[in-house]
Length: 168
Image 1 (cartoon, rainbow, N blue to C red):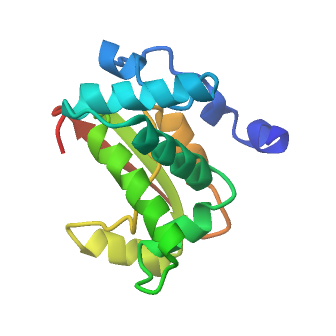
Image 2: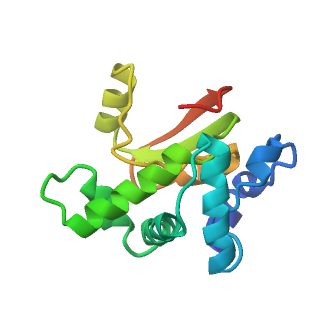
Image 3: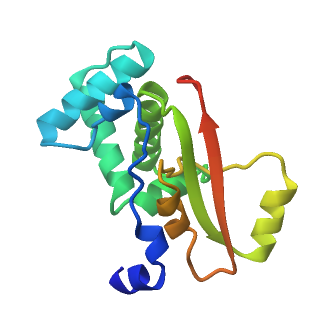
C-alpha cells in the first residue's frame, strides 16, 4: 500500500467535508467488542426498519457479516449466482441481505470503484441497469472508490449514487 500511496497520493487525501446524518454516524455494527456489535446490529435494524430482531438473529447476522468481510468473501459472493451453493453459504448470504435490508440506509452520495476489461466496460455502459451480483461495497469517499478502481484491467470505473431516500 505504501508504494501505491506514493504513486497515487491524490487518492489518499481525506475528505473532511463528509456530511453524514446523525443516523449514519450511529451505524456501528462492526465497532467494539462482540457484545457491542450484537447490540448495534439489533439497534441498526430497529432504527432502519422499525423491526425487532432477536439476539440469536443478530448473532447470525454478525457472524455472516464477519465471514463476508473476511476469509469467506468469495464463497458467499459466489453463492449469489450458484443455485447449487451449500446451505451454509446460502444462509450466510441471506443473513447479510437481512442486515442490509433492515439497517439504516445511507443518505447522500456514495461511490463504487471497479477495474474491468474494455469488453466489460462496454457492456456496463450499453445497459441502463447494472447487476452487482450480490452486495457491493460503496464508500462516502470518492478517493476510496478511485483506489478500488486501480488494478490490472484496462478500464477504471467509478459509479456515483446520490441517495436522498432512507428506504430501498
